Length: 238
Image (tube, rainbow, N blue to C red; front, top):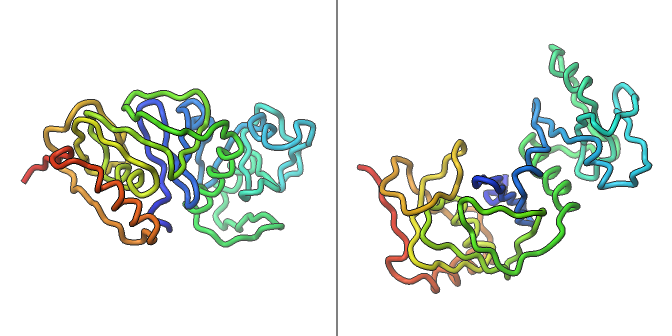
């Protein structure tokens, strides 16, 4: 798994990092997706936005046509076929579960890789703008799915940010730090950016570039040159 694929949460916004893209997703949009038994489920009406609205969407297992309000699980990044919620439940209850694959793709991927691929495809098709700059704040909100590029200027000021989110942004955007920031140990159960500076943390701060390619390392180096001394604080308990 690429160390740069992750989904990190702010209060009202999600950052979805895939192998090729950084997508900034409104909380309401992200929560339209549910995960059940390793399968991502979206509303049938949401899926219609990615295809011809008049196209019928049929479950590959029961062959029933799905309704706009139904939850369905795409089987591949191209969304060739889906499984309806009833069939997902049926699969969960089986003792011997046969793998259900898209007959066109049949790609061997882990559940996490599958989820990242579907998220990338689903949100990429919804992306309405590429941001030239972003002032990142814990309570920030955006109206539509947006993309960050390597040329996007991301501004951090007087806040605490997780080490993982910080390193991902350092490697893939143009970072500016105004005032001070604190680094927090990454935690999957908490938001990754908070107001003010952290006084202390019991989590380990992990800044590791293992698995990052040459381009990402060079981008980190360029951003590091712009950071003034003592602009970043790390407070940890013994």
